[in-house]
Length: 144
Length: 144
DNA sequence: ATAAACCTCACCTATTCAGTCAGGATTTCA
DNA sequence: TGAAATCCTGACTGAATAGGTGAGGTTTAT
Image (cartoon, rainbow over all chains, first blue to last red; front, side):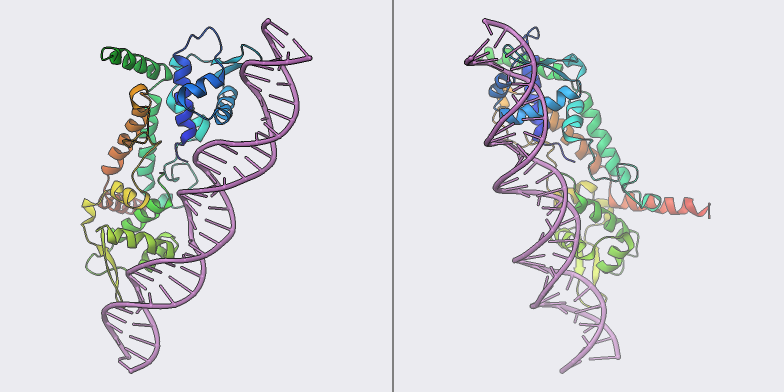
């Protein structure tokens, strides 16, 4: 299972959400347009994130989405695993996928790759990404 | 682009090849059967590896494959890149794939993940994997 | 009642994955 | 020379996944 545009879109939208006033829910349409994401596609992703406990949603007028778990406690790995499933570079990484365990040491390589990706992605939170963007914006202001 | 069974099969077959006498070429059929790989599928993979300069081939009776580059100079990353293409966890990793560079810092995360995988896979050679297997075999002999 | 939002689930098209098939070219040996 | 063993090539295929779209329903504020 790869990292697909699902995770990519979702992370972008979540960063957008994190940068806004967290007191009021933000309509999905606003996030989708701000980041150039097909809104009906994003609906699927946010529905999954809500079920997973990352987001909360409010229906009706003045409805929208907000974080259920604070964005500094949501890692990129969380999002990837919810939307794209566990990272498995080549199978052999899960227990019984390979029948040649005893005679084949190749699987270790893929496991190492998996762990390495997980370490990177679990080390970055949505909050951090939002802050990085803010500092980018700030920097670019000097050039305007 | 993910890491698919192509790389997985190819690495296994190459390890098998590395463990055999390198003086004579080994028929693909032998490697395929030793590792449970569909032989016609492996043919495609080995053809690509030959074109890429990893293997050399000999036709006819007593033909087969042998390494063109010594197996301690062939990394797992080499194989993956030849057969499955460059590792790109979510695009944004290549230059112009993302039009939001200036305002989006999310791409950095995927780049980090990519680099991290590349580091792991480029740190392991076919020779090393072959040696690991030999030591596994040796160890298991104590229990027979 | 109406409009703004979320919710659900089915559907769809293109691409990729994991092979298979058919036949051809080259080399060795009898 | 002919047969056998091996590599070589390109087309094809069935299944799954990726990346959405569409149609309609439910909840809520005004």
